[in-house]
Structures are given as structure tokens and as C-alpha cells.
Image 1 (cartoon, helix red, strand yellow):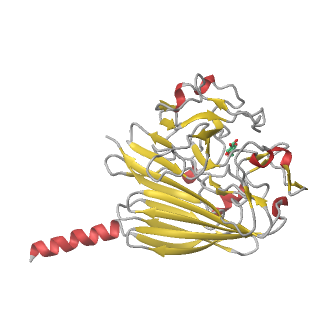
Image 2 (cartoon, helix red, strand yellow; image 1 turned 90 degrees about the vertical axis):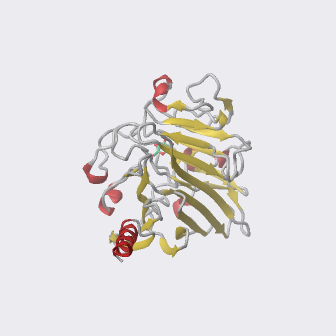
Image 3 (cartoon, helix red, strand yellow; image 1 turned 135 degrees about the vertical axis):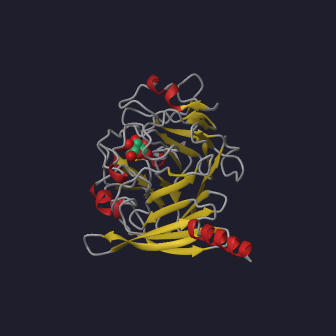
Length: 371
Ligand code: BGC
């Protein structure tokens, strides 16, 4: 009898510590009174993801290390007010077109469009009010082996200068095998460029652990799209071999970062992923290992490119969670996407979505450990 009670106690403890499921609570209000919700998704091993309906931002991601100890591996802010004051796209959905469009201009079906410019002369991550700053509606779905949150947003014809009413849906799934799966989909009533991504900044040692120089990265790409000083692609596709951009073999981020000629110095480039890895459900396009914690993150994607960005513009001033000030190189992003400025680069894969077609992009960030 006593054993039975002991077993119940253990079960109860397990259930309360790692109760898989989804909870929801208020996160704040927009100036017009719109309520922002925070959803917490928890899986059976205790991995937890917090998502807010402002920008579809993943505010926290608690992942186990080699000893099962959880740490929040995503950079972010502490409150809606801090997010609204401005931040460099921490954990946000970026679009309608993530990355840069030269001078904010493009021509589609014979018509010239002018977009909002918000990065010098260029358009970046959807413009002044991109998908990272809008309010999404959410629907949660608790499952047997996974927890899902679907976010919806309707981007009106003319928003930030883009053509067409675009209905967007982004599905976040947290599986019991410690994967964060994302499926983006969209339909439009006029041809429009679209390129959605997730702008999470990861630090696999924990979000407040300093720089990511020790993280060991592999990116399965032999080529990249070099850019000008404003990071607009020249249109060329060049080999990574013999450059500090070569991550075809596992290499620490900090090993060659100072060799990069850029201001600020650091990785901020688009890789042309090896075709055999793109859309594979088993072969990652990139793997990152943090040696001390033993945390490993593998990235799988349907997209032909990935922007590798090492937080070069972080400068220790940005207010972070719990009052932390994130230093330069305090986190890295692996933004799976089509190539920058694709709408103006006829040799790059097209990002035009036509009416009657559905845009679909799938990416998985899958977490495991090594001893
Ligand atoms: C870009 C960086 C930019 C950053 C904004 C990245 O996707 O490549 O150049 O500074 O987003 O936080």
C-alpha cells in the first residue's frame, strides 16, 4: 500500500513538474486596447516554449542540457512595452518579405511598387510595421504527442506598399521529441512577393551566457550570395571554400569571425543550401553544438537559403529579459528563407506567390544533446 502511494506521489510530481499541454494568459494591451495573449506550450520532457500574439514572438524556449537541466536559449525582452519600444526582431515572424529588398522597389507584372524603407535606403524584414509588429490571432491545439499553436494574420492590399490581400498562417508545433516545427502558409488575391522566416536569436548555453563564439556550426552550403556594403546581393553566387564563411566542416563561430571584412564585423550572409539537404525530413541543413551544455540544434528546411547572422548589431544597450544587456555576438540566427532581394534578382529562385497558389515553408529546429 505504501509503495502504491509512493508511486502516486512520483506520478503526481511528474505531472505537475512536466505537465504537457498549453496554457494561456494575458500579456498586455496595445495602445488601441487590443489584448495580447501569451501561450505556454510544454512537452512531456518539460521543454517549454512561450509565444505572444504580438509579432508571433517566441519569448522563451527552455531546452534541456546533457544533464536534463533546462535553460532558456532564446534572446528576448521582458514585457510588451519593451518589445514595442524596439528590438532587433528577437524571436519574431518576419515578413511579408524577410531580409532586404534593394531601395524598397520592385516591378511585378509590369507595375512598379515602392515599399517602406527602414534600413538605410533599403527595405528590411517587411518594412516599418512588418509581421513582427502586428497582432496575430491564435488557436491552440493540445495533442497526445505534440502541442500546437496556429497564428493567423491578414495583411491588406497596399500594406507597407505590397500588392494583394494576403492571408497568412503560421503553425508552431512543440513535439515530445524536443522539436520546434514551423509551417508557414499563405494565399493572396494578387501576385505578391513573399518570404517568411523566424528571427529567433539562439544562445544554446542560455540566453544570458555572453557570446556565442564557442558554438560549433556546420552549414551544408558550398556557396553563398555575396552582397554590397548594404548587404544587397551582387547577384553572383560564389564558393565558400577558402573564406571564413566555409562551415561545411564543424567550426567554432569565433574561430575566423575577425577575418570577416564588414562593419560591424561578423556573420550576416545568405547561404545557398545544398540541394540534397533542402526539403529533407532527415538531413539537416545546419547543426549547432554548444560544447559545455552539450545542447545540439539541428535545422531542417524546405527553403533554398539560410541567413546566418551572429548578432553583430547587438551592442550591450538592448534591454533583455530579466534586465540582461545582450552583448555583441550574444546570440545567432539561422533564418531559413529564400535569398535576399530575390524579387529583383532574376537568377535567384522566385518568391512570387500567384493567386490560386499556396505558399508553404516548413522548418524544424530540433534539439538534442551530446555528452
Ligand atoms: C539581418 C541583419 C539585421 C538583423 C536585424 C538579420 O536578418 O541579416 O543584417 O541587422 O536581421 O536584427
